[in-house]
Length: 439
Image (cartoon, rainbow, N blue to C red; front, side):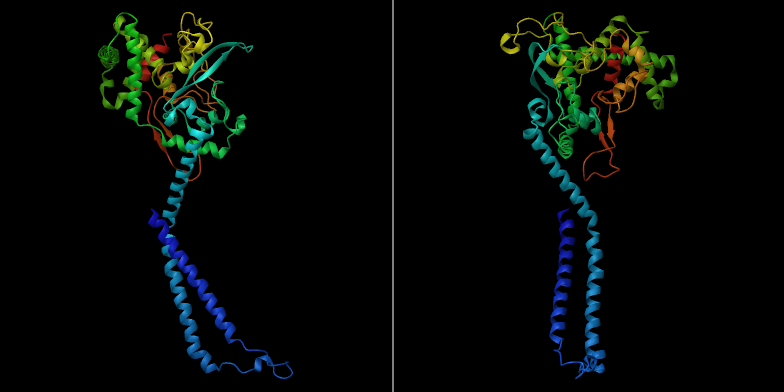
């Protein structure tokens, strides 16, 4: 890359030097050849002074001038195409260099300028920040540790425009506005530099799956331990395997009802038919169905990675700051539960996102399929969803795979499409939908 960019540049400088030196030589000899004024025109007209004879002018000197010009034209005719052959390499090198510079600047802003690392952790792995809860009238309630989600998967959840919207205007009154439109201190270019840095820290699908599974197993252990002795990792893994087996049974029931669903080309139709069964429980063992919905509930409130992969972050008030945990005066400024949390969290009761209780998702989405597709794709800026969902801010993330088609910042090709992996599998999303539609 460096060779492609530097060699044509060197050739260009050589051509420039030859032309410049040739011009100086021409001026030098032209001045030397000039003759002083003989006298007034009355004595001798300028066009009558002695000069080179036609025989000399049209002979050796003319041949020299024409030869020199031919050499210069040959150099230019050969060198310029060679120079411009390297133009794609120079443009690509410019884009690579721009990305490197903007990424480094974005990292500096993340670590030192805006100090995003304080809340979101090194390399965007997630973290927490101390936050003072106050009442609507401003009275102090408690000092809590508010979990900030990981940003090394943020481009799987949101488009770059949606991330910029959050950077500009903040989120849920905890994440402050950093961009000038929202009254923050950062310029548009600085936000673009942060975007370059965020692109550089996105993690692999395998790492995402590992984090999701780790959080689910943690939740399952807590669930099983609440009913008896402390559960082991092996017991938790076995419980998850049994819950997933319910989805296999639903798919078999769907194929039994319609043999065409067994065909490979009808795999998507099979998914939706099985989801209808998982939501209704029709034909499933009641105990197994309850276990499956519990699995969906644990996915809904996945505690792993600062709640990055959970729905409860937005749909359950208190989830992000452990409102149902023990309060101590030294840490929280109080030793009694936060008002409203004496009996624990109200799962899916609403917070930054709406309440999902009392059949809210049934009213919003006419079918399990449309519900699941919304969870996969998320909300889009300026687009309504469901039967009456508002559009505009795009702050409901998508948990399925997505492709970025409108990458921001300089040096980005207009036709660039960047794929980002899903945060949850289709099977995991279906379990969450079955849970939500039975609230």
